[in-house]
Image 1 (spheres, rainbow, N blue to C red):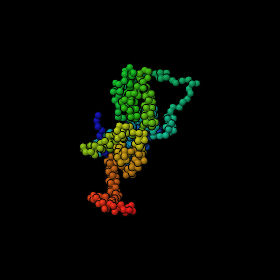
Image 2: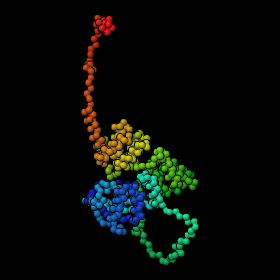
Image 3: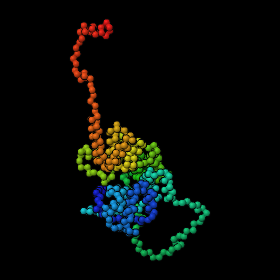
Image 4: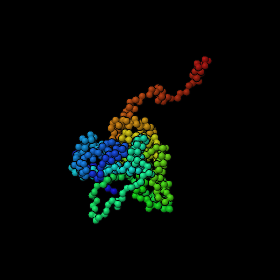
Length: 427
């Protein structure tokens, strides 16, 4: 697998927009109602802005600079880059680059999934549910639903093709270059080995040949959103096989959802498994302790990092809530969240108290902490300040005159003892 080229995006870099699909008003509705709650308004606005760089129905737009894009959207370049990566991750955009003194980019636009495909996708549907209220979700479903009309008393009189048209000599058909509605599926890491799973299930129980590419894709997505390992997914597949020895997709979805809900006391999946974005990662060239620590913060999701700190025990519902708040409400990257969690556990006796965590998060937000190095630096500086304050406030204890002195043991004489007893007893 080739490593993607990671280049710093500069205002002078140019770009053109390529239309790989058919764009219409239905696309606007889908983006605003379904995609915007998942990827945010800035990412959707970037899609519309790139779309506007195309004149009417042309396939290739005019060349622009990213400075022009910054001015148009009134955003910093790092905000545009983050929005672009959201569009890429969710399957709305493909990005190509040609390196040079000025880098040239091609932004290839794709259609959003159809409402049916979006709602059927367990990752997108679950994230949409988490990000909006139940009533708003029901309104969206109703908006995209086909109205039900009772046709019992109606007769179907639709004309057929053969009744209307006659076929003559067929001309040569060239369709390869004709634009069609094209969409991309979201790309996820395959965290389970399906070959190993299917090998562990008896062929008498499951007809492996019936497992289509579509079902495999569904299994990868369910494993991702519900954080399932091979053992858990194997049992869920076994419980989702119908009498024909095929996997029932609807039953599989329900079983995965019920299992997750039961394991997590009724909560729904969140985005806490996300890792540090590739463009923010540093090339580790040193074997120093700091470099190894940075690599750990970068390469682990907050969920996995906290699980490791818990000696392998899954984070509790309250801990997951803390992680979700830091990732979504505070918009910290996963690496920064890992640093914050590590810092809090060290200074708070291994307790992840939400109010305590959010108090520090507020400070980091005001300090505009964006990277792992900045997070580590603010922890180090805070620790230095605390140590200085501790030294200044240390009060020198007043000790009794005898406390550190080494007195010699002198025994009293018989006369001295008799005189002392006489004074004490009135003798």
